[in-house]
Length: 99
Image (cartoon, rainbow, N blue to C red):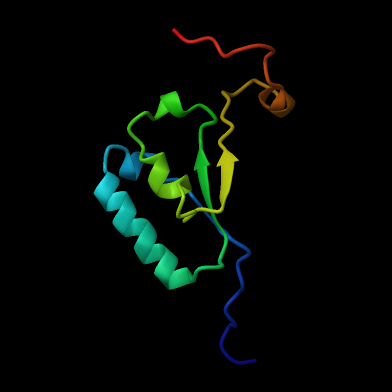
């Protein structure tokens, strides 16, 4: 049978809010290192809340800026127990309320 064969991944999606919020230089180093490892054409995505004010110190420009180090963005959907999954996908009408 032999050793297991490496599986091909279609993309990587990064959840980096906790690690790189307020850390522009470290985020830049991480992304340039990661991009050099996976190659220029490999799809990278950023998983984040759809509202940037939830993480105002995250250096979004490093991940989604002109260099396009991340070529995709995926909004994070979170809800609490007891709420049906379909509820999370329904966007409320109008602007988001802030406290």
